[in-house]
Length: 431
Ligand code: LLP
Image 1 (cartoon, rainbow, N blue to C red):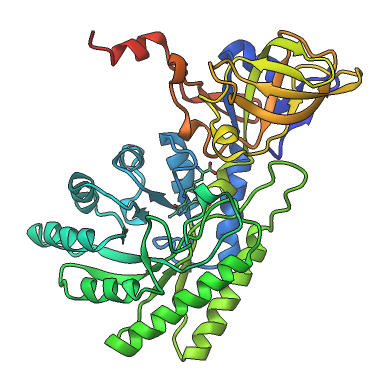
Image 2: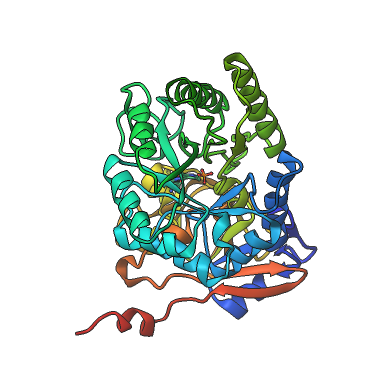
C-alpha cells in the first residue's frame, strides 16, 4: 500500500497504524486495507477517462476482487460503477445502498431468482452470456413490464498471457458468445427479436493479471468489428463498449504494470481509430478493473508460529493462516512478497517458504522469499498485495475461521468484516 512505512522502531505502519498494535487489537491473521490508497486508485481510473456523466461511470469496480458494504460505499462515493456477478454480490451492493443504475450484472449461469432481483432493483446493465438466458430474461422482463439495458458478452478469441484458469477470451471456455463461430452475431439477432430487451452494447473480458496490453488492443479491434457488422446487418448503432477488467498489478518486483492513464488512453485511441475505419461513431467505452483497484492497497498480517530449518534445502516458516485465506498460491502458482512487519532485523537473509497451518503440503503462502534468519515465533509477517481475490476466495477449510478485514486510514482502524467465530461456524451445523 502507498502508505506503508517502516518506523524507527523497526515495525511497519500502514495508514498511520502500527501493525503491532493492529495485531494486538484485532488478532492475526488479518487483512488490512489502506483505504486512502484504494480510493486513490479508484479516482485515478476515473480521472483517466476525463469528463463523464456521473450517472454513467466509465469505470466499474469488479466487486469479485473484494466486496463489503463499506467497500461498496467507497466505490459509490468515488463515483465508480460496480460489477456484480452473483446474488450475494448484488445483495451486498444493494444493502450498502449502492445506486442500482450504476451496477452491471454478470455471470454465465444466473438463476431466474437472481435475474428477477436484478430487474426489480433496476440494475443498470445485465450482461447476457447464453441463448437460454436471452430468452429467459426477455420473458421475465416482459412479465414485469420492464425493458432492461443489456450487453452481449463476446469471446473475442484472444490468448491472454496469464494463468490458464484466469484467461477468458480464448475459444474453448465457458464464457460468452464466440465471434469466430458467428455465435456473437447470432446472439445479437436473438436479443433484437425481444422487445423487452434494450441492447446497448458489447462486452468483452479477456482475462486477469495481464501485463501485455496488446490483448486488449486485439479485443478492442475485434469488438469494434462486431459493432460495425451489427450496424451493417441491422442498421443500429450500439452506443456502448465494455472491455472488461484484467489489468495486472505488481506482486513482486518482476511485475511491471502499466498505469491506468496509459491503458485508458491506449484503449481510447484504438477504439477511435477502429471506429473511424468503419465510419462508426465512437461508442462510450467502459472498463471493469478489480485487482488494479483493490489488490495493492491490501496486505495480510500473520503471526509466525514455527520455523523449521531443513539443512541444505530451505526453511519453512509457518504462519497462523494459509490456503484458507489466500488460495492463489496453491491455485495459480501465484507469487507474493512478504516482510517481517514487527521489527527490524540485521540477521543474514535465508531462503524461506512461508506456509500455512492446513493439512496439505500445497498450503503455501509465499513459495520463495528471503527472510532474516533470526525469524522466530511471535514475529509478524505482512504479505503484500492481497487486497484482491484473497478474502473473496477465502474458505473454512479445516474449519478455519475467516480473518477480519480492517481498513486503516489516518491512524484509525475500522473493521469492515469481523473475524468469524466458532459460533458462526457451528451456527450452520444443525446437528
Ligand atoms: N470483469 C469481468 C467480466 C470479470 O470476469 C473479471 C474477473 C473482472 C472484470 C475483473 O478482473 P480483474 O481486473 O480483477 O483482473 N480469482 C482470480 C481472478 C479471476 C477473475 C475473474 N474475473 C485471481 O485470483 O487471480
